[in-house]
Image (cartoon, rainbow, N blue to C red; front, side, top):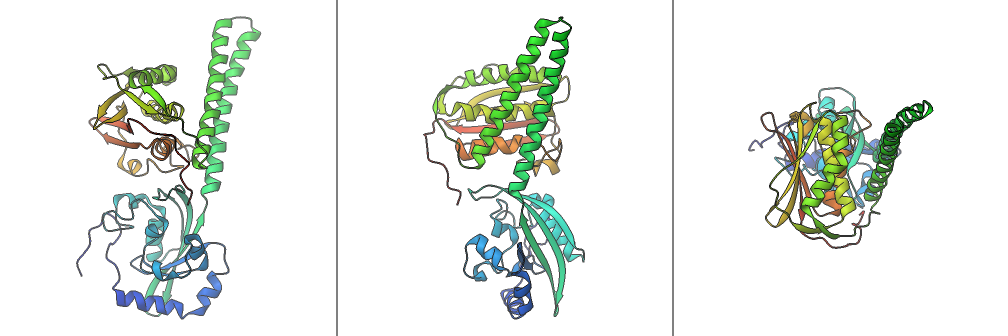
Length: 382
C-alpha cells in the first residue's frame, strides 16, 4: 500500500477487509447499541485510521440517513462537511488539522488518554459553521484499538454567549464615555469636548447594535440584499472617514492609497460597508502604534478588489484559524471580525475573502466582489 502524504496525522486507511471485520465486530456487540442509543450526544467509534466503524442513531438522524452503511470508512471531517476534508490526503492530514480540536482529541485517545476539546469547523454546508464539544475515550475490543468519539453541537450556545459578551463590552465602553462627558458638563467647562464625546459614544453604540443585527440576520438567513450602483473610490473614502478617528484612538495612521482607478459596480452598500468595516477595524487593532494601515481598491479580471494592509505579521498557527467563528487573539469572547466579513461577503455578496501575511511584507486582506449582483432569495439552511 502506497504511503499517502500528510502534514499532521497519519493518512493511510484501513484495508477494506479490515474495515469490514471491524464494522461486523461492533455490529455484533449489542451492548454498544443499547448503551450509545440511550444518550443525547452523537457517538461514533473510530478505528486506528480514524475511520467510522460504528455510529449511533443520533448521527443517522443528524445526517438524515436510514442506514449507517454509507458512512463506514469515512472520517469525522467528511461527515461534518469540513472544507479541508478533501484537501491533502483527507481529514486529519492538512496543516489546518494541526489546530483542530477533534483531531487532537482522537490522537490523545490513541495514546491512551480520555480527552475533551472544542472544535471549530468551517463547513461547506450552507447551514453554517460549527462549534462542537468533542470527547474521546480509548476502547480495546478483541485485537483492535478503537476510539469512542462523542460530539455535542454547542454552536447556538457559543453564538449567544459571544454576541452577549461583545454587545455588553461595547455598551460598557459607551457608558464610560458618557460618564466622562457628564462629568465635564457638571463642571460647566469643555462643553464642546463633552458634546463630541457624547456624539461619538452614541454613534459607536448605534454601530454596535447595527453590527449585531446584521450578523444575526446573516446567520439566521434573514438578511435582505438590495444592490445599488456604487463608486469604488467613494466607498474607500467613506471608509476612511468612518474609521479615521478609530485609528487615531489606537495611535495608528490610516491612509488611502493614491492613483486608484475609479470603477462603478453594483452591490448592497450596507452589507459591503459592514464587511469592509470589520476588515479595517481588525487591521487597525492589529497594527503596531505609530504604524500605518493602508486601504485601496483596484479592478482585476472584471472584479472589484478592496484591500487593507497593515505591517503586522500573523503567526502561522493563527492564520490556520483566522476565519473560524469565535476564534480570536483578543479574548475567547471576541472573534466575529474575520468570521463576519467572510460570512457577509461570501454568502450574501457573492465575493471572496482572502489574506496574505509574511514577516517581510505584513498582512493584506483582500475582498474580491463581482461587478454586479442581483437581489436574491435567502440561501437555504438545508
